[in-house]
Amino acid sequence: MSAPPAASAATITNALTIDVEDYFQVSAFAPYIARGDWDLRECRVEHNVQRILELLDRHRVHATFFTLGWIAQRYPALVRSIVAAGHELASHGYGHERASDLSKAAFSDDIGRAKGLLEDLSGQEVKGYRAPSFSIGVGNLWAFDCLAAAGYRYSSSIYPIQHDHYGMPDAPRFAHYVREGLLEVPVTTLRMLKRNLPASGGGYFRLLPYGVSRWMFRRVNDSDKQAAVFYFHPWEIDSEQPRIAGIDRKTRFRHYVNIDRNFAKLEQLLGDFSWGRMDRIFLNRDANEVCVG
Image (cartoon, rainbow, N blue to C red; front, side, top):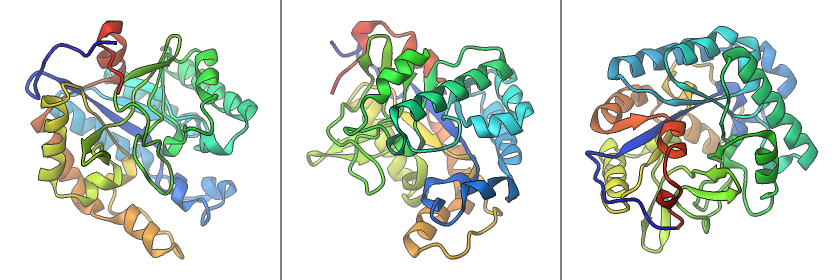
């Protein structure tokens, strides 16, 4: 398939995405926090999402919120606030279980349960899905069959990098069809020195100086002529979240690094680029504009 017409960072609208989960649901904390204890933890997602909604409103930006069914079931007003503000509601599955840890039947149940719940609460079709921890890869590509069968129209579940917890470094870097009617839209990487470098948010955005992230996004817009996909979590703007005791040093660093500075960096990012919803950026494109590679 051919590449889209030439564009620049000044004219390309990038996709802003938020993975709506709370701090205690992070996959790296799974060895330390029992799933059965989630309801016993202080939940901070409502307050943090409200701050994000106010930030987006101030910048007149619409985004896509990949929302856990577990969160939506307990905080339906949060879901309705997202939709009322003009944002896209998408699925992050129900219980934040990695797709790679589930059987095909269990995965189908999880994504179907989440989609039905989110649609019932919002009154709108849920078109998109993002696997927790980008956990679709070479070992479970059958997950795309399940997503297509469940009625999803796009996924953003592959991170084409090498990582100790996830990643599919040989996957196409940009939007491509993985099944009939199902588009995979990977989060953004920058191709340098014959490898893909992470350039799309999360811990990398918190760790790197803002100027590096801005340069990477501009390179993707100007050199690749592609819309970038950025993601972050509500807990990444919450420096007052409870600290989890007993975690190893690597996990502690990855989770807490520069959380106190992240909100200000997001302010800069929203001001430096044009942003929009996943569905409007990718599902409205002509098939000939979908790029593979």
